[in-house]
Length: 70
Image 1 (cartoon, rainbow, N blue to C red):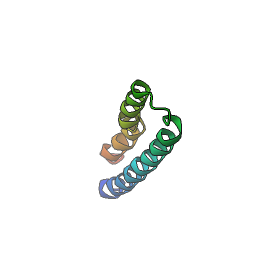
Image 2: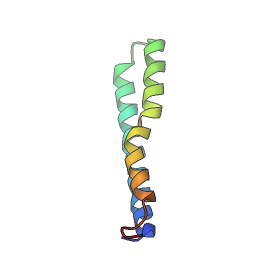
Image 3: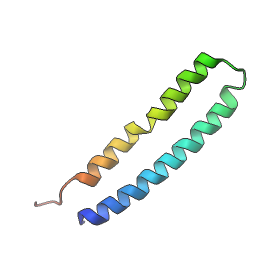
Image 4: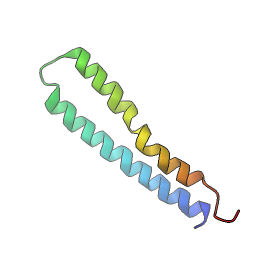
């Protein structure tokens, strides 16, 4: 697979990942933090805001890998 196709697939996968991650984080925050605990909400938003990076790292490394045999 050429690197251009791999980057296109990876970019689409990252867009889907970020969209799904955002929607799930908003749904969890809507129901979990209705009580108003600001410290727990702050911790949740930091973790949810940075948490998408871990699943995105393998996609980015796959995208930047050279073609087999090069």
